[in-house]
Amino acid sequence: MAECVPDLVSTIIPVYNRPAMLRQAVDSVLAQTWRPIEIIIADDGSTDDTTEVGKTLEQANPGVVRYLWNPNRGAGPARESGRQIARGEFIQYLDSDDRLWPRKFEVQIAALRANPDCGIAYGQIRLCRDGEPPSESPHKWSGRKLETLFPWLLVDRWWNTDAPLWRRSVCDRIGAWSDLRYSQDWEYDARAGALGVRLAYCPEFVCDQSHHATNRQTGSGKWLAPAAKVIFFSRLFEHATSAGMTADAAEMRHFSRWVFSHSRQCAVDGDAESALALYALAARAAARPSADMRAYRLMTAIVGWRNASRISGFAQGLLGRRHGRFTRKQSWMT
Image (cartoon, rainbow, N blue to C red; front, side):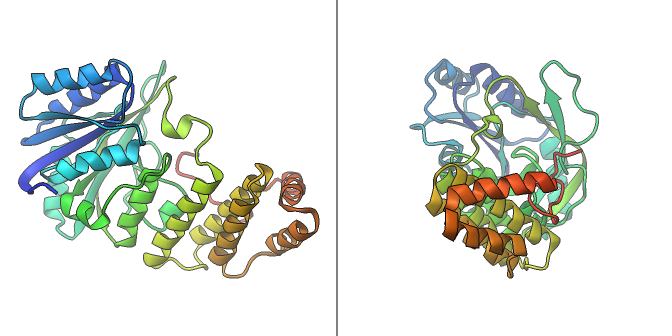
């Protein structure tokens, strides 16, 4: 790891085939009222003009912008390559299709200075959809004053990657980014939650999240493959229990039903091994499985995982249930 430079903010931007958006993201960092700053462009193996744009930005901003090319392994390893050379006392992760508001660093560093017990400062997210005026209300739960990441992370990733500003010391304690192709940012947040990191809330817009026609990770429709779901949900549960979450919490009951639904989906997809692993995790999170979960498990022994899941899904539809009666609204639901 590089030596820490006091007051410096290191912004790490993973990017893959987004030359125009990358320029906008970098410009939003260069427009910050706070100095000193450094920007690390962590290219995830781009195959278009992004490489040339990254090099041009580095040449145009010597000593501020650094360009790294990496083989394509996903956003997590790309961010980690940037974290390894980041020198800042503070770390900003910025997705290449999003933008920061000019006073973000100034406002959030002031919040961290005023709250030395807090390791992360976050602010409000403005949602910007292509062809529509920007939202006037904070996106997800970024408009709520929350002091910890759990229990809310058991329901949803209630902010985006750009909203928080991290103390480097927290990132060092969290360690390396996961190589999960999807939701590696959620898992990263959960590790901070497991450490009990406290949050400082800044009640103003600090970033724009873009929803556009080109691909976003969570908008691809495929999310996690069955085996990756087992990894993600198992880690989320582990981090939640480390944070003190217990089976009687409403959010943990929601989590159990949510994992149970993915167990059934894995069975429909033909991956009985992942289905069994997720069922076991759902049962563990619930402490005592519900009657329908026990009935479902018995049914799998009789008709098999795929058929049991289809029957269960049909029954759930008739009852109008999604993840069970303990399901809680996710942060993006209005």
